[in-house]
Image 1 (cartoon, helix red, strand yellow):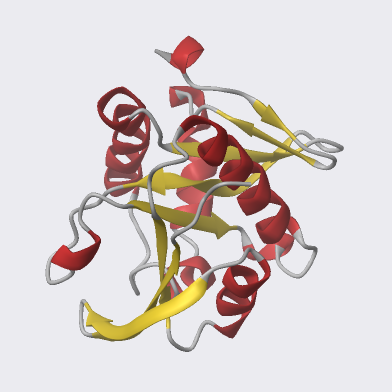
Image 2 (spheres, rainbow, N blue to C red):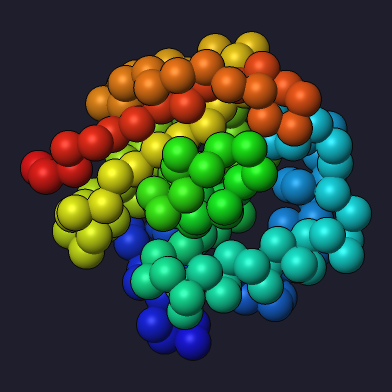
Amino acid sequence: MASQIPFVEGERLLLRTHSMEDWQTCCEIWGNAEVARFTGGKTQNSEEVWRRLLLFQGAWVSLGYGYWLIEEKESAKIIGAVGFCDFKRNGLSDIHGEAELGYALHPESWGKGYATEACELALDWFIQHHSSKNIVCIISSPNHASINVANKLGFTHRRSCTYNGEASEIFERVHCEE
C-alpha cells in the first residue's frame, strides 16, 4: 500500500507515507500538549497514535487521498503531518463528503513557514488529482496562526460552529482549479 501513496517534494519539505517505524516519533508529536491544544484538546497516548497511523494509511485506500508525514529535507527529521480526510464529524453533516485539510507540526517547527509550505504541497497534489472536490478545514477559533495559514492558502470563512464543545471556524476552498 505504501507504494500507492504519492511522495511529494518541496523546496524544504518532503511529504511521505507513514510507516509503522514512525510510530514513536508520531507519539512525540501527537502526545505534545501544545499540539493537542488545537487538535482536539487532549494529548494522545501511544495506543491512540497507533490508531491514527492506521487511519491515515487506510484513508488512502478508501478515499484516494489521506495524510502524509512532513519531513524536513535538510535534517530528515519528521516534523508533523498534513493531508486530507473525510472524518464524518458528528454535528457537522454539512461537510460530510468534502475533503478536510488538516495539519499538525511539532512546536519546534512552528513559525518557520512549514505549515504553509506543507499545505501548499498537499493542496497542489490534491487539486491535480481531485479537482472537482471541495476542500474545507476546521480550525479552533483561538488558533490565529492556522487561520492566517488558511487565508494565505485561499480559503474563505464559511461559518462558525461548535465542535466537541470548542468554538471553531469552518473555512472552504470551493473552486479548486488552478
